[in-house]
Each structure stands twice: as C-alpha cells, then as structure tokens.
Length: 407
Image (cartoon, rainbow, N blue to C red):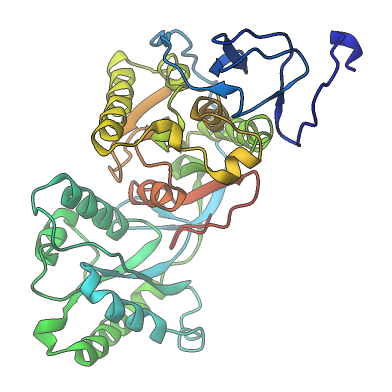
C-alpha cells in the first residue's frame, strides 16, 4: 500500500506501466501529466493495472490557448562555443565529409561503390577529412515530376547538398530518370568552385566507367576539403534535432524532459532546436500552440495535424496505430500518452517556427518540423533542414545513426 494515498496495488503491474490512483467509471477520461491520455473502457478500481485492456481512445476538445504560455528565456551574455568547420556561406559544420548522393535508385550501387573506394588507408593523406559517405535512396523515378513526393525528395537532396557537414558533394545519376540533376544544381545555387560535381552513368557509358569517373572527381575534391580545420564557433550556429525512439513508460519522465532541459539551455545560448514526429505529438499539440510566438505559427502546426488526420482517413489508418509493440510492452497505451512524453523533449521556450519536411530552418530558438514518427525518416528531414547534430533519446533501446550528422 502507498500510505500517503492509502492506495493498495491490486494487480501485478510491469515496470513502466500505469496504476489507477482512484476509481474510474467506464467512459471517464484518464489523465497522466494532468492531461487526457484516453478514456476508461470499463470500470477501473483504484490500484488496478491501467493499459490497453481497459484504456482506449476517444475524441475531446483541445484548448489551443494560442500564445498563452509564451515566455522568452533569458539569453546568455556570452554564448558557449564549439570547435567546428566554418564554410564559405557562413554556416558551421560539426563534421567534414564529402557526400556522394544518388539522384535515383538506379544509381545507388554506383554511389556506394564510389564512396566505399575511399577507405581509411586511402584517406590517410587527408587527416582533416572525416570520410566519403554514400547517400543512396529508393526514389527518383516513377513519380510525378511536379508532385508533392518529388518536391519533398528534391528538398531533402538539396538540403543535404548544402549541409555544412559536407565540404563537397558528388551527385550520381543514371541519366534518364525523372529526378534530373540539373534542376537540383540550380536549386542549390552558389557553391565553392570544384566542390559540387556530377557523374551520369549513361553519359560515361556504363557502371564501371561511372565509378572510375566518380572516384576521380572525389580525388580532385579531397585537397580542398582537407584545408578545412576545426575553429572555435558560437553555439548560436548550431541547429540540433530532437528525436526519440523505442519509447516506454519512463521516457516521458526521464530522458525526454532531460533533453527538454538541454533544449532550453541551448536556446538560451542562441542555438536552434527542432522537435519533430507529427504523429507523435497528436494529442499534445495544444501544449505547443500555447507556446507559439505568433498566431500564424500555431495555425501552421494545427494545419499539419489536420493533414495527418486527413492522410490517415484516406489511407485507412489511425493515428493511434502509432504506439509500437515495444512501446506498449514498455507501458505506453495510447498515442495521446506517447505524445505527451514526446513533447517533453521540446522544453519550455517559445515556439518560433513550423517547417515542412526538409525545409531550410531559418528561425532561431525552439522550432518544429513536420515529419513522420518513423525515426530514420524524421532525423533525415531534420538533417536536410540544416541540423548538424541529432540528439536521440530511447527508453527500451533503439539503435540509430544519421549519415553525415553525429547522433
């Protein structure tokens, strides 16, 4: 029994799971963090186990309270610094890579072959270069050239090409794909001479010839990339992605609020932090709209939630499908509960912007990016938006690394 509350535990309750603090009638709202996480599916006695067998979803009104909880954090007089790579465009990288990016799935093998050629032994003469990494993907053709999918793919590729963690970029294309390289180069704009290159397999005459040409182009970039050295830079240059995965019942009271505290600290030093995973803030979005610096920022977030609800309706899905088998085994029952823990990563500072997936992040302070709840895709969008670091919290254990961006 818990003496202070005169509460007797009535069931075997696994670690991280919930127990009713008082009697509930069927249909009653169930609260955690003083927020609704669902509704009782049956009568529940105080001390009983609360989980999927007796807790379910239901509709309820959110109090968006737009802007009511905005408070500016006091800025630090002298921001902290880090050792980074200062680029000609004024941005600062946390790594110094050369990226090999495929324009289409058909060039993925060539992309990997070019990058894998540059072993540690071959790069020994260029100690300031962290590596040559491949960025292949399964898209680039068979989709509407002007559709939403192609726009998102191109935003992502351009974002990675302009990322300050890359000293140089080599695009690898097949030649006949919908996602042509020329428009990508045009979108990227001004670049350091000689450090944005391309190789087209059909122009070179095949796979082997394209690999040879690609290796030669990267070899030409290496001396310039090696000239970059770490220099002291203000933390205000950093964009930090906030992500979580493998969450359990403890995530919302341990790792996630700890990361929220770190987010507030970074914002006070002038940095930008980025919360994401829209299906995993559903049910807690009102906690973010209350912190919106402007009404239009709150409305943009509400609009993204509406897009996801419409998407689920069109595809026969449900936002409550989101808690995974592992999440539920760890004590999380509904997406409403999971979202409240996930939002804790965002700290308490005002919400200063809402961005589409892979959209360039140009606001300072705490911001939001619309991404799926699937961790690798979410982190990819944050990186494409400019994040030079991803901070990834996990409850049950989740292994993830973002290519080119320390995680």
